[in-house]
Image (cartoon, rainbow, N blue to C red; front, top):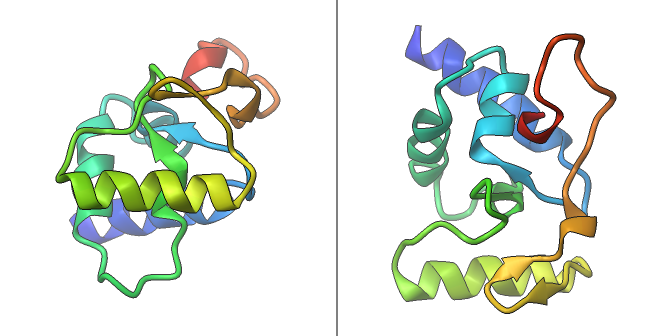
Length: 111
């Protein structure tokens, strides 16, 4: 079952367009795993170092980079900047938030 959950997360992350970010909760919801934001983070942290999956496009709901070792945070910020993502202080500017068409009955900030 965990492999199925991971596959669903990977599929959603693969769909995040260049120049945009999604939150862990948003990825979980889109993977039909509401309440699994931490599981999304754990799943992404276990990716191989040479992965082509755009893990760097997943951030906290506050649009901040998740706390991890400083090298990984610097790499994430560098990869996002290379895609044209801009920051205001430590947060990604909200214009880079990936928004989809609203799912009926859902919170649009969690999509």
